[in-house]
Length: 463
Image (cartoon, rainbow, N blue to C red):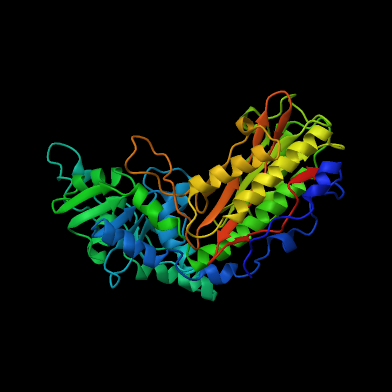
C-alpha cells in the first residue's frame, strides 16, 4: 500500500490534549525477544547489498575500469563485512574491489585472522584474499634491502588441532579455511592480487581514499592506472537502495524509533543530557542496535537549563544503526501539560510536516520540499526564521547522499527523489529562551509516494 498520509490527531494539540502517553517504560526484561532476528534480516544478509544496476550506471558514466574501497562503509557495502581491524582502528584494515565487468569477481581483502568469521556462513561474502605477514621481513632492511616492488613471502600459520577429539562442522570449516585460502604478505600485496583477479589492472580506477593509490604506487602496481577520487561515486551508487538494504533499513528504523520513544517516556524532571544519552544507548542495545547519537534539548546546545524542566519543550533527535544501517527519528518532548504557546508551535510544525509529506514522491526536488515546509509553517502562524527544513538521505551513513562535484565544498546537490531512496525530512524549530521541537521520520520513496519505515507516532510527546 502506498503511504501518502500523515499522522492524524494533531488538531488535538491545539487544545492541549496529550497525544502520546503511556507509563514510563523500564528497561525491557525480555532481551531475547527484542534482539532476535525479525522479518527478512537473515535473508537480506545472505545476498549482496550493492545496487548492481546503479553501480554499473555510475561506472559507465565515469568510464571506470573498476572501483576500490578502503572506507569501512564502502567495504561493508561491497562485502557485508566489517573487519576486526576497523574496530581496532587499524590504518589499512580491509579493502574491496568492484570491477566494471560484471563477469569479474568482487573481492574482500582482509586479515587472515578474519577467515574463521567469514566461513561461519552467517552472511553472504564475496571471494576473499587474506593477508598475514611477511616471512622475510628482514630482507627489506639494511644496505642490501630488497626493493618494495618485490613481493615478500607470506606467513601461513596453521592452527593446532587436537586429533583425539571430533571436530564440529563449524570447527572443521575453521581448519579448512587455513588450507583453502592462501594469504598474501601485506594488505597492499593482497589488494594487488585482488585487482589482478578482478581484471582491474589498467584504465581509470576510482578509489574512495587516495592512500590506496599511494600504497599501490609503492609496490609498482600503478603504471597503467589513472587513480581518481571515487568517494562521491560510491555515494552516487549507495543513495538508491537495493532490496536487501531496504529490508535492513526497515529493521533499523523500527528499532531506532522504538528505542527513542522508550527513552522519551523514561524522562523525568531533573534528568541531564548524559542521563538521556545513556538511556538511549541501553534501549538501542536491548534491540540489537548501536547508538550513533542522540540530541536532547535545543540541538547541540543541549538542555538550556542543563536538566529537564517541566513545561519547557525540547527536541530529541535519535540515530542508531542496526547491521550498520541507520534509523533517524525525532519528536518534540514536553514534561507535564504543554502551554498554549507550545501547542500552537506543534500545530505549525504539523502543518509543515503535512506539506512536505504531501509532495514526497519520485520527481520532487529537495528544494521543493524545503520551500513547501517553510511556507506551510509560516501560514500556520510559525516564525519561519526558527524552522529548519532539511531533507536528507540515510543508509550506511547518516546523510549518505552524493554531494555536488561543481562546488568548492561538499554541499549536497539539489537531489531529485527516486524510487528506493530512503530519506528523512528534518523539521526542527529552535527558539532560544522558549525551547525547541522536532519531527523526523524514516521514509522509503515508493513508486508514487512514500512508506514510513517504523510505527507512526504523534509529533508531540507529552510525558
